[in-house]
Structures are given as C-alpha cells and as structure tokens.
Amino acid sequence: MKVNRDKLSMAPSTYPLLIVISGHSGVGKDAVLEKMKKAGFAFSHVLTATTRPKRPGEKDDVDYRFLSESKFRQMIKMNQFLEWAEVYGNYYGVPKREVKEALKKGLDTIIKVDVQGATTIKQILPDAVFIFIMPPSISELVKRLKQRYGLSSAELDLRLSKVQDEMKRLPIFDYIVVSHTDNLNLTVTQINAIVVAEKCRVKPRAVML
Picture 1 (cartoon, rainbow, N blue to C red):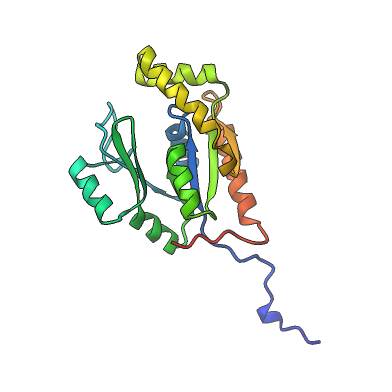
Picture 2: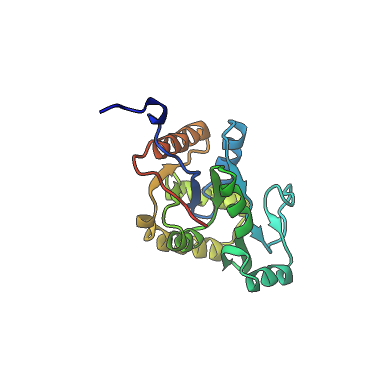
C-alpha cells in the first residue's frame, strides 16, 4: 500500500482548553492567576462580573468587572452568563460571550469561580479542565482569611462551614494543586504540567459553547 506522505501528521489534533480554576474563599486563586500572567502563560483570562464593592487597590476590568445590581440582573434576564450565583450577599457571574469568543479564536481560556460555580459549569461543559486550588492546611486557610478580610468569629465560622461542604464536591474536579504562599512558582509549574498533559491526550477535550 502506498502511503500519502503529504497527509501524514504525527501531531494529535488539539482544541483550546477551557480551564476552570476553583477553590475555597481566601485560598489564593487570584495570586495564582497573577503569577501565571507574570510567568508568561499564553491564555485568555475571562474576568468574573460582580456586584460587590471594590476592595482597596482593585480596578475595574482588571480584577473584576464591577457592575450595578440592576445591570447584573439585566444580564441574567438576557442569559448572558455562563453561570452566576449569589455569594455572601453579592452576585458573581462569568460572562458567556467572552468565553465563547476566546475559544473561537483558539485560545486556551481560564475562568476563576467558586466551587458552586464550578459545579454548575461541570454540568454544562463537562469537557472543561477543572482544577481545585487547595490550601496547605485548614490552619493556613484560616490565617489567610483573617489577613485578607478581617473577619469576625461568626463570619469566619460561616466560611469554614462552607469549606466542609465544598470538600464534598472534590470528585467533580480533575486535578488538585496545593497553593503555597511562599512558593507560588511550584503551584504555577504544576498547573503548567496539567496543561501540557491535557495537550498530549489521545482523545482531546473539545469544549463546544
């Protein structure tokens, strides 16, 4: 049999990845994403929209898309979110159009959501890559929550009770990566290894949105 060499390809077919980064509140998801950007990762980061007030140092369309509650509700009615939820009295949602456009351009796309949001996206787009960012320990998580938010004892207890519920949802994730505050390079290296491994799959993930 004569082989048509022009049609031979040793490279597997690839599709852009939709990577869902999730984890407990205060675990350091933002710090991980920022480190990935500084390390030169090639990906599109779709910002989460929220109605919560800006924290000191935050900028619109840099950290989040800060929206009024009326604007957010309007987007809900127009089905413009991939997923949305109310968390601690504020609304959060992932704009669907930005995700769709990034994937259409062939760009690996990262979205950052809480565990509730990841659960919803898993049901809609099961071929996305789901990565859970884990704290080194619960005591370290408590320390980060206190430093970042200055929570009262009641507020801290509420967040920690949610942690227990979130741990029950670990089976929906594909990977767990520990976030070490003093060694984010290791965290980023492990996420990069996950991306490389996903690109080498015999049966690549194909996210259709």
